[in-house]
Image (tube, rainbow, N blue to C red):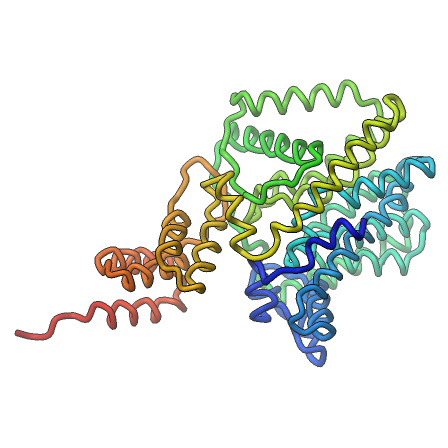
Length: 446
């Protein structure tokens, strides 16, 4: 499992890593590591001290040597795979062979490639490690290890606040001492988080009708199921079409849900799958609704289901699936070399992937290729009605305005600055106004 991820090691900074690690927005000196608990994560509205601490430790050990950061990410993913049998033993009885196969499926599954390949997705493996250890120690009624593991999960990603209590309810065991410690930890976490990020949630909900809310989430279910079943590299695009419940794709997903409920006798498995899948259904608004990292949590029950199917169908098909997945994961690593190799195939697959166009535009701008940068940023600033996706907006408009002026297109440049001015936060308005004043000075008196 380790060897197939070695292809991820040799690469440049990618995507959000430019801000979080290269510009050290989410990295602290070890002497100031306590600030991870008193400040937002990487100048965002999220609160993830454990992730900041992990970046800071890597930075102290490796400096700017990126393969070191990736070795940590690979180790964390392999730890997720190794801990899975312990976690699943809380809910199910598995043979030694089934435990080994479940570990292997998770270790090689291509859906994990964004979590392994992108350092800024490390919160996914950290929170999953914390969640699994919390349930394992809780099942043993070990209060202190339970609370320590829950702290790791909670301070890695907000998801743990919902997932862990739901999973504890699924165990139908109520151990007093661990529960009291967990409740106390939630209180401490809430106090620290509100002090660092004084808002309930930073991502606003999109206004959708009831039919669109249901239909879009059913289509999201299709997306996650396809990513999990296919032993192929997932797309990185977060673009999700807004569908009504009457759309054929939504109805097909509803049909699958009904069949699963009727045919799968082990309802505990279905509930476990639903709990782990819940964050990917945008029940709580998230910036990148369709991002493939939301398939990482449900990878655990999926691997279990895939292995249990072999009880009836035998193992050869599973071994073939594992072989294809291993090859797919290995070759996926070569895409994670730089922003151009990462995003060029993605926009070819999904031209509406605005954030990919944005990073490609900035990549070519840094390289001095203004023509290609202009082309990509023009795509990045387009809007796509009836779709959910992460849209940068004014930063791309500002960069594109500068490129337009450099290429001798002053009218287009000025128009973009004006558009950016209408949507930019107050702290950027002096910069935009200065650019307008310097590039387009008012004519003097005649």
